[in-house]
Length: 417
Image 1 (cartoon, one colour):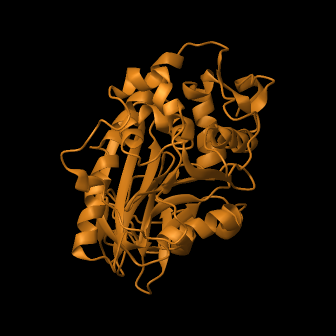
Image 2 (tube, rainbow, N blue to C red):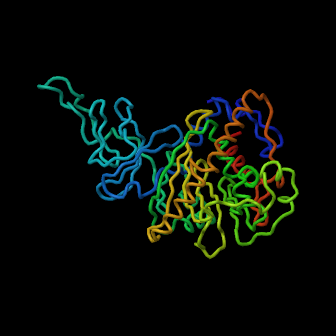
Image 3 (tube, rainbow, N blue to C red):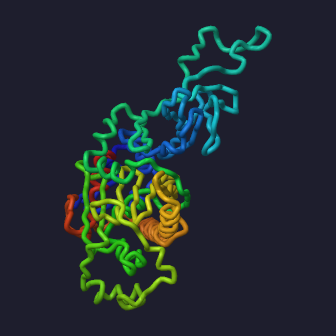
């Protein structure tokens, strides 16, 4: 692997400047696969509801590395690289399956649900001829194991022995907020998947960028779902790379910027208070927690997002598929204790934000605009100084790019840039 300093000449201003090169450079992308996705970080793989019973299997990804997650016959959750120990073929071919064992279709090498090799076809040859050498040891060949930890029904994996325990990786405030949203028995309400034509890091920036949310997502602003003049704040983890952005719909203090700014008349198209919905029930909500938070976006480095908007609870999991292509997977959730009416409301609100809704549509477009605009940009860099030049928590304002700077702080550290 080429030295980091030879790959990227990072501007001296540090995390307030991001060289556009990192969004389209193949060597940078290859280094990310090694240092991040196969490195010492925990990555979201699936939810326990995907594998409720022994024999249940799902496939997932850690960067470009295919992964199997399985519940074995003892009820234990296991993960392993989806690559046969014989010739490297995929072993699990379905996104979800129920099996007794995992068997490669190429040469019928068969594995237990913890990845250990149980048998191979014709190990002793045919009619006393051929077969494996006498010293062939079944125990010496298995699917590459992935370390697994489960927290609040969320299954995380890592390929590195150096990754600290999950609670240490998350930190206390991040762990507590996950517990807030996912600490009750969950049920799956729906799923979406979409391809966005941009580098994965542009989406990682986007979900940390509270600055754009009040400008690009005009529906949120017009109908007071999430605005910068609501009470709220930004919380960064100790290593800066995870974050929480939150707002409180009930404590709303109208800022004149929304009334007088040129962007208001140019983009919103209607004077403040004139817009109305034909189906206002879309924005009906009940108070679910006693902290007043009605909108939150939480990220865990490198590529998972936990969303709570009104009463819509969702996981967004984004998988790099090349320097300019990313698959964005959505899991929409409710709680087992929900009434049918509450489940219906969650689904309705989820359709606002998901792949068929306004928010995902707008983010997908704008990230592609940045991807296209930055290709071939030479030594030019993004300017990221809204709210200052540091990556620090701020629980009095979300008019800041502190969380974006925090992502780059963690990224540069793990990448060696």
